[in-house]
Image 1 (tube, rainbow, N blue to C red):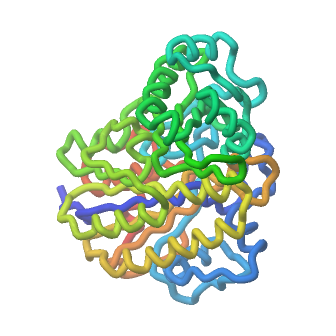
Image 2 (cartoon, one colour):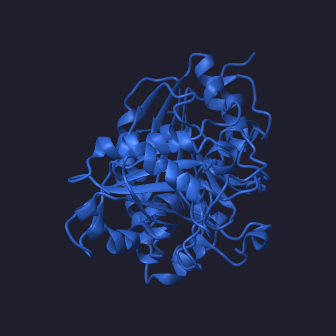
Amino acid sequence: MTRKKFKRVFVIVVDSWGFGSAPDAAEYGDEGSDTMGHIDASVESLHLPWLQKLGAFNLKHIQHIPPLDHFDGYCLTMREHSNSKDTMTGHWEIMGLYIKEPFVTFTDTGFPPELIHELEERTGHKVVGNKAASGTAILDELGPDHLKTGDMIVYTSADSVLQIAASEETFGLEELYRCCEIARDITMKPEWKVGRIIARPFVGKEAGHFARTPNRHDYALKPSGKTVLDTLKENHYDVIAVGKINDIFDGEGITEAYHSESSVHGMEQTIEITSKDFEGLCFTNLVDFDAKWGHRRNPKGYAEELERFDEKLGIFLSLMRNDDLLMITADHGNDPTWTGTDHTREVVPLITYSPSFESSGILRQSSSFSDVAATIADNFQVDPPKYGESLMELLK
């Protein structure tokens, strides 16, 4: 058996960084969506030199950043195989699972009266809202009354989520978490089984001045099967989670976890982890692209977040070792110029780099996000996931 090629693998998910409509986008109402392309078209300038140097814009041609004659990474786009476009499905597929049946959503109807009644009975708090809404808009609508009454603000989105918003200052963070744990228990029934319960704490005293805090917490379902995270952990490799990775996988297969206050903070934590002499995987999610800019339909904010990421990426690249592998990807699209506030069904990039690469190039499109998991398993010589094809022989 040959020695593994890379001692440390860093997977960074730029949450929602789509590279154009997937072949089946029309089935999701997303034909024509293009997160990266439409962001580029919406701004006067864009400065992403490190992503450019890795080949991102040889893979995706855009107006403001030209392709390079010579770049440093191997790049490809990946199609999602699973029947969904939500966060959990995307991340689970990246780590080797396919989801055939989408999680239950309540976008059009709100949650059933029976569910809301049980939630009120068990938590001791009345529920208001119970509809699909923007997280910032519903705070302006219901936040002032919440401060007076203590009623929980419950809402959903196009995702399979039940979100509870409450004031950190008056309702209390621990009480919010307690109520979310009860909601998670209630929604384990098959007909109510949403993918995630999300605690949405906020501060502020009046409409127009409410702000969500970094103390969000996701209560996700456990993965529906074994992921490459589990396999690595079983084989005594390190699996370090940064950002909401630990929540998305409900702690399964994780050996060490770090909570991030922002995407910039998540990159700072990942940069700090380069100083650790670990052996295995560091898996990072950068959520602000999706939560702050994609869902809020703000292409300028998204572009500025990309520039902040690129700056941190330059620092990260300078600290990489010859036996490190970097894989930058996304879990779905979220075109900030698209209609509504939902994710968009798009292909996503996979940008790979190691200081030990002797060549570079644009590779064929993958038919599954699980190629990431298969590549990781192949590198560490552990059992491969059921799905996905390894890219290891192409990374030279």
